[in-house]
Length: 199
Image 1: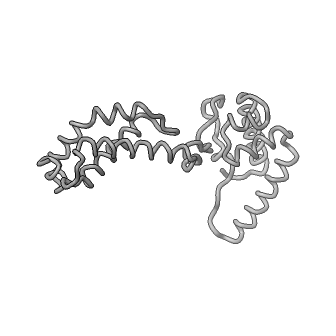
Image 2 (image 1 turned 90 degrees about the vertical axis):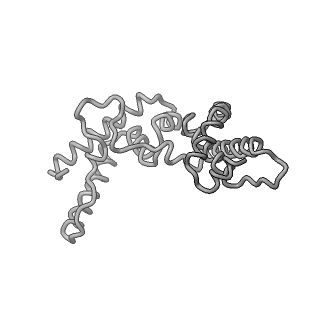
Image 3 (image 1 turned 60 degrees about the vertical axis):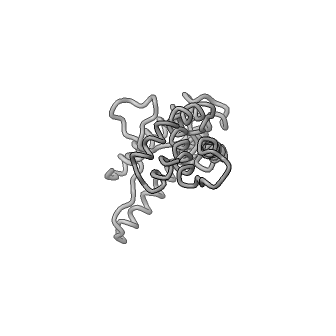
């Protein structure tokens, strides 16, 4: 109890000793659960947050021992983390599709989508008119140059779907999705080059 009292008062040495004492239990408890979008280290961290809360909230005037209270807090914290992850609250973060990373089949040095698609320019009326014309030209190119499969793959990809999700929705494999996106990238690049758009 003296160690708990010291830790409550902010003594880092006392808190470290408590963490060392309960770390094995935290690891054991974390290994019993699966965290969507995370790993065992994330669950161990959650368990240590639970231990911190146990130290903070423990009251000596209660019947329960600190050990029982700590185990309860650690378990609750881990379960809460698992339930939060399974509610898909963080799905957009866990399953994002990056424009800045190349697909698996991309050649060395091949530009990524964020390098091919022009970004915003300075808020100058001339630049805005040119950008608007370029965008209209790009949309026209995409509507005529892309096949139906390429258009559908690109639309789903831009909506944030992973290769696997696009494949499931279009009833094709991820290799087909990857190849379609590579063709889209080449067509967009060729169109922008023909318009002499500075990337």
